[in-house]
Length: 502
Image (cartoon, rainbow, N blue to C red; front, side):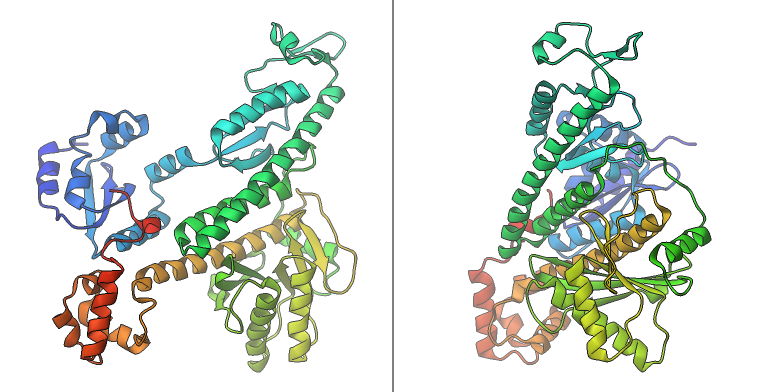
């Protein structure tokens, strides 16, 4: 394989424009290994081939630079557009080094290795499917490390740097050095006694997680009110991760992961939920919003236990504005199944609602209002993965390794992913269009005329008064108001919350 030609790459860099865009770094096989955005493509891309000491000080950046054999660029019209395009391309290609850098920036998790006889506590940056117990993510790494050190003193637990020794009587000696005296706990303990310490520490950690959760939720609401939608979305994803972690990490047991065929899983699901028919068709609904803004919903369909994406549907909430998950669920369930019955289609074998009693009751109300016989319908409440029955049966909690529950979780998680994707698309559209918000007299028709005349929001920002006056439908007064509005708001610079890196 020929070595990369530095001179050709530098010539290619010199030919780049000075405007905004996205660059795609490729390895010797042509695979995309990194996607980045730039305010100035020429300036940004050139740094990879004349790297500064500061840039090369990071080992992963050195590795990336060494892998680059070619690159492509995509010119865009504005900085916000480069931000949006970068995100889409990362999702599409999943480049190796974007993932590596993201992992470095993740908040820390605390991991307890459940499979060990004497479990130890450690902090990690990402979660693996290894049957360990995880708490977090925690947004302040320094405080978390300090907290873990204090927990060792408070509860007598072992951290990752510990190597306990098994004694002849079956008990364990935790430390061979002075740490045994410093931490002030019995240094020789039975397995049972140590597990009791671990359980107390886990209870403490859960409280810490809930404390972080409350703080982050408040930050998310403030960001949404300030229309910093990208920041609000980032915080919402962290809140969701914490909630999901808390729902899965309470029993300290060793539960093997069971592998089972799709058909057997569906048979078990039918038996567990006492369904009258084999659950060939499953549908699940989820609501997504950021503190009552951009409220949307999703419906995903599984056929024979697998995603059937041709049947997926997504919804904008139309009947109200604000934060009301129950009302939103009633609306989308009613809208969806009204169409089904009008087209005389059979209902699915099982409908799953992401939520608890309130969401299930709202869904039932939708069927009652439609005068449709209520189908098999359950809710899956996240806090403890509790199954809520619509027919009045007692709630059901299945073991976390139960194949039936795992199938319901996959269905619910897919609905959640699909709803969040739609929510993100709407936020992106809002970022592009919000520059013209607040100008009285500028409706959708005139906005469309402006976009057709100028081609982009960035060009509208830079247009002169005379440019506005020749647009069809924009009279002299509105042209003056538009020009004054844009310059008074100083909207030639993207909002702080969406400004991309230099």
